[in-house]
Image (cartoon, rainbow, N blue to C red; front, side, top):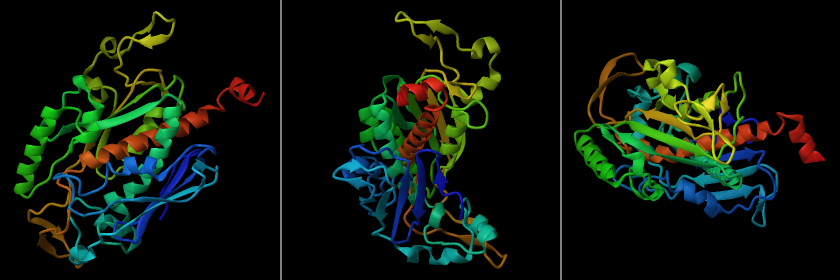
Length: 366
């Protein structure tokens, strides 16, 4: 299987399956001398681990991370960093019957068509547990970015019809509320809505949003590796994401040029800025110095207890009731995954940018 490697300079390789012995990531390109402890990474993993609220699967995993290489005496050595999280609560029996049919909304049929064989236990590599490696690596990327004055913060913007009021954005609320919403009132309404849909045997979708601040202008490449294109790929690679928007997103198709253009201005301190930010912080594939805004639309969890129609491996039409321990909504646990994928992308492009001008090289080496 190809496609498990992401990044050019700060490169990660995720490995492992949902019901295998463990999952993890190998990070190549992390600078030496970075202070790093397992607790630094664990703080991010705790935001996506199961069993933390009524919105998550009951699978009781601690998701405790182990640093296997690349760190000595509390600092990175510049060699590959290997991180591992052991699976401790696999219940593969819940999935034995799905070996013979294709679940609606899952990757089962595609895997069989591509490989002629699949790990049906919890979805194998297509399971949401694959994101453990992304989050562990993204935690390190976020730590590095913080030293560069760049912050990456994601949150739940909406769940079903319930939309959060982000005008009074609270990071504390995002990190403490089960919905990862920045709005307590919206959190309470969303919890009621999800509970109602779950009781009906159904699941719910929603929208995540990530805001990146402190990124200097000029990050990204102007042709194929545009900042917005790379961010879109990174976020779209998260299993349940079906659409990505930058800035005003799809709304710009209804604007006039006079409405969509962001006017540049010079602030009191002499710095160039914009009066508005319809572009979401990117122009021509490059950061423009303003806040980067990325939005992701997430589908409802495909594993639901309601009876569904599908096909078995013998080509027969059948009805199924999917068993197992499943999230009624993906969004709250996926927020940190989006945050980490954005952090990995931005850091990788920032490292690339160090060679974009001769004076950057001469200033460093001379």
